[in-house]
Length: 138
Image (cartoon, rainbow, N blue to C red):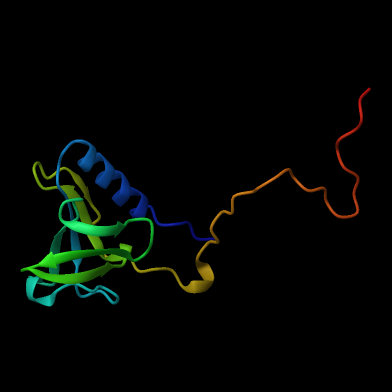
C-alpha cells in the first residue's frame, strides 16, 4: 500500500511558521505541470514564485489538492490552482528558510490513493453476531 505524500503537510507547516513569525510565505511552482493555473506572463524558465501571504491572496485553501486561491497580478484578478506535486519549494521571502522539494511529485494512480481516515462518531458498535463486551454491574 502506498503512503500519503508528506508534501501538503510540510507546505502547511512552513506557511504557518512563516506567518506566525511575520514572514512572507512563498511557493516555487513548476508551472508546466498538468493542472497548474497561473498567469503565464509571469512564468520564467517554467517556474513561477507565488506570494501566498494573507495580505496577497484571498480564500487560500492549503487543505485541498490542488492548492487554490485568488490573487491579483498586475492589477488583474486571477484564480490560481497549484497541484501539491507541482510545488518545488515553500519558503519565507525574508530569510529564504523553508523546504525545497526539488522534484515534481506525480500523484499515484487512483486505485493506489489511500482512503481518508474517517472520524468515528459515537460509541463503538458490537460486531455482528457477537455479544457486547459490556455487562451490568450492580
